[in-house]
Image (cartoon, rainbow, N blue to C red; front, top):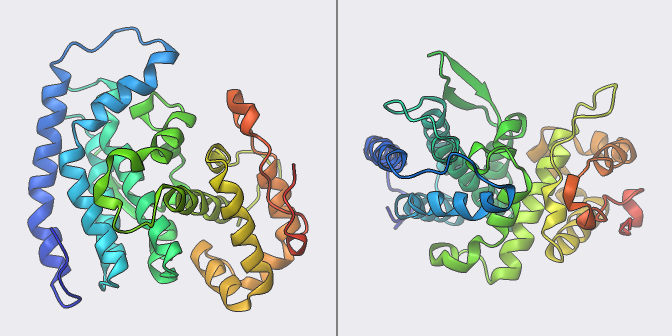
Length: 307
């Protein structure tokens, strides 16, 4: 599924790939559902068991992720739109159990794979300053066929359930640790990020920008923040926060581009920064409180970390 040039018809790639992708994913779900799945799973066992099941899909998904990264890197027209479509297809599979499959860890895997695809693609887009692509990946509605047969249209930043994946039994911290370590056994993405540190910094930046996008409308009660998973990606997240906020504070063009990505204007982003940052800094990590120190700087022009 490589992308050799900018002129290839990406619609053909999607049209030809979708049927086999859906069929192969459903076949894996069916086979895994027949396996000896534990009825009772200890909290300490969730992460390793989830990773074991997710790995069964990797031979398929690594091709999709390679395609997505190549589309972003090569500036393929409609690349991000196609990534969004693949993500919608994957999430729809999780929403519609295949032949009676009801094992959460297994049925939730495709939706988690969609989240992984979007985070990695968005991380690369932001790293390469492909802001139009990043805008699509974060704020473009993803079409999903729900279990009731109707369709929903919400963007990544609005689909909170993706950040609490069923593939990890609804825990938000395990998928962050997972994607932070994904570099280790994923040579297909090594050609798009310079090294593991760069990869983790890019993923942290993507999660930070998603958090900013989620603060466009702060509820009166000032609660309900997205899980601040970027705080779990230390020390790289410190660099990501410092660099991102420094650029927003000092570079008008960059501030305008990030504002576009999150669906706002640069003037409003700067004017409302203190309120946004305060709101986002109140988000809790739960049991991972020891990682709870990274903060958005207040005021932004200080660009000092709040510890």
